[in-house]
Amino acid sequence: MKRPSVRFYVLHRRVGLHGCDALQTDDAVIGEPPRCEACGDPIGMRAWLPPLRVNFWVCREGYCDLVYPTNDDILVSLRFKKIFEHEHLRGLSSFDPVELAKVRPKRRAKEPPPAYFRARVCRSQAVLDKVASGYEAREPGPTCPVCLVGPPISRWKGIVIKEETWPGEDILHPRGGSGHIIVSERFKQICERHAVKNACFVPAEEYSGDFYPAETEDWAIRIYDETLAVLRTMNKAGRLDDYVRAMEEMREHVLIDPEFDWIEALRERFEGRIDPIGDAAHDAHYNLVAPWIAKYVRNRGGQASRS
Ligand SMILES: [Zn+2]
Image 1 (cartoon, rainbow, N blue to C red):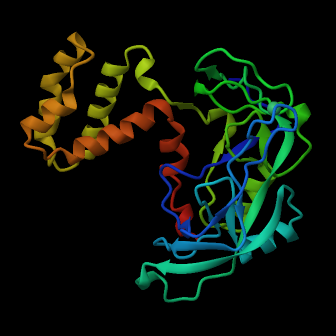
Image 2: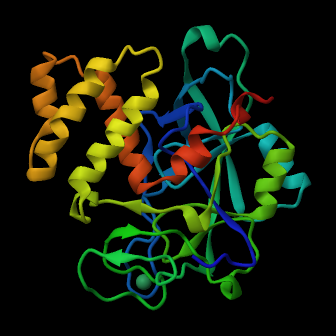
């Protein structure tokens, strides 16, 4: 894929991160989602209204600067809020105070937590280029010319922003995006310079995904071979020799019959004790559909511990 002259990154918030977690309390007040003024369809998740209270999980590294509840908002520490303001970054607003109702686990909650704020990420006029991003629609359907939301997608190759449409925000939801948060190169550099904790950036054009990988060609044998390859790398002291050998023997069956349920066959063979194979299959899945996870999320070289 052609590299754009302006670099954008995705602020990665899910798979493979081990930072702090925050969940809205059960009494959270949930409002309406933002809607497109033209087609009326929701263009984001339903709004979380004050008072904002969360149950907070502290990670091994202590309190993170960025925390991602399961909605469109992000929580930022007081330290991050100051950095954002002093550096004149653009694209976050609101900064509503968040109350930490419970902080767990107790052993990591000895120090008082920093103040946290819920920041809203702006809905930018920047346009996500669906063609350059390799979007594959699940079924044909109209795309709204204003919000650019179209039919649900199956898979995509990366995220490319039409540079000429970008008004210059440092953190944004692009039009036609699928909820991913995009940041500017400057945002990334400033986070790195200040060692902002729990900020993980992936070059946007590499940020691929696939909701239906089993529909792609040769998936059965590809996922099998990748699982076996991961298992071999996990097999440092020969502890997993039995599993590796079993998978080598079983490969022929998968080649002949792509429907062959090899996980079930291995489970029977090892009387249910196949956790290492499960772990390997999990990593293998992401290696095939989202190779950037291994490259930018798992191998961050202790970025999280730098504080
Ligand atoms: Zn619309």
